[in-house]
Length: 232
Image 1 (tube, rainbow, N blue to C red):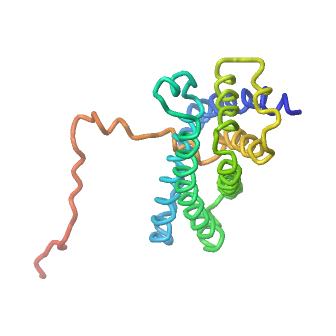
Image 2 (cartoon, rainbow, N blue to C red):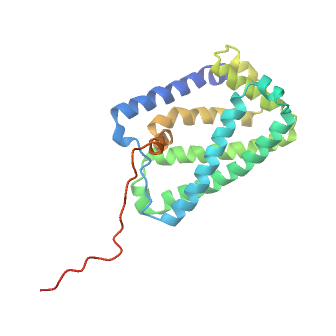
Image 3 (cartoon, rainbow, N blue to C red):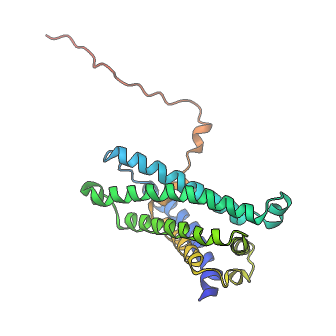
């Protein structure tokens, strides 16, 4: 089972994420949206959404570069494993705390307000709940990371992640003996990837970069005063 979860499941999750996202965009493009409910509890949405998105994006890119940066490159830059571990703990702790607070605000808003709850799908609740659980697991791993500040565990997961992308058949062996909390964190993360194409998370792939080179500006005029018509 360990070999399946850490050696085979990652390829299943990434394949479903890639193929499922492409298929959804081609077959159901009108469902490719975040299904915003910003007209309801707007202030609560803005506050929670900003905290959640900033925190999650920081964590995502932190994991991306932290796990996939080759070890020889890190050593060539003179960055010790201990320094990298401390940076991951500090940045991950702050970003994780922001995302958790924001996520709690968002799920409270979605569950408590009957109008928002009525427009929420089961997948909306499931994926947000899984993300909150994932954030809790990630924050709990900080306790273990602080106790093992030498970065040994971190190196194991870097080797595992890079082995997945280099199709190293020994990938699962790098996580053997790792703390259970870390293993649960990885498993749940892969599960979120698997559910990604079937949730509103697909809007993350729709970064509006086209606005950087659009031919002209869109002019929006506001009507501050209503036109005066003569009274007959």
